[in-house]
Amino acid sequence: MGLTGDPVRFGIAASLARPGGNVTGVSVDGGLGIEGKRLELLREATLGASRVAYLSPREGWASVFGLTLKDAAERAGMALIGPPLEPPIGEAEYRRVFAAMARQQPDAILVSDYNENMTHRRLIAELAAQHRLPAMYPFQEFIEAGGMMAYVANVDELIRRLGDSIDRILLKGEKPGEIPFYQASKFDLIIDLKAAKVIGLTLPQSLVLRAEEVIE
Image (cartoon, rainbow, N blue to C red; front, side):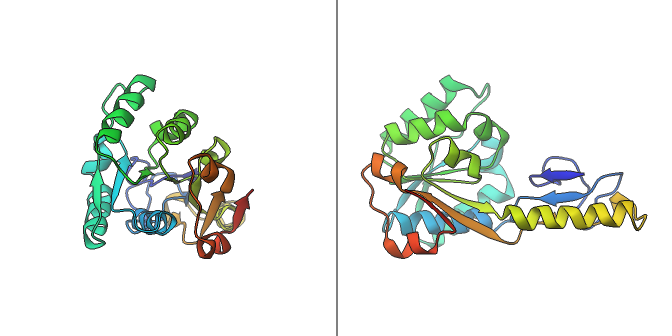
């Protein structure tokens, strides 16, 4: 039991409602709409980005999450551009993909929550700055690595929900596999103004004022 991404997508649980086996916990994934929300915030930050690069393995592009994001972009009159990351995913592959993206002249970049991106978060933040791309990230760790902006699950809420599950198992004797995974529902916007300044971007004050955390 613990914190995870989408437990169904990663094969940890049969479903959120009935995990099965001996597992339950808290998912930091916000469901199908969360990437669309990140895209919306990124567009607001850039005052109307129309071409957004999506940094994700091919699996992410083809998943229901990737297809939902593409639909959201199209409805907003935006183009989602690649290419996907291909294995083996390491520094050379990230440099290849960023170079290919640059040739398509994106206005910004949206980084997916795949483990590969988390592992290479410092390199991704460096490449985004190098290419002067406003970037939206899925976890706070990307901000700590030098990223500009992240829309992340609220940690206090996740810990509280995890504590509730522990109480139900240890004190009430419930079976983990019968306790639904809790899916994050409260998210915080984190902005690093120093990272924005590095790429020459002045963020709208209306957006900065809505952020739960602003690094200056």
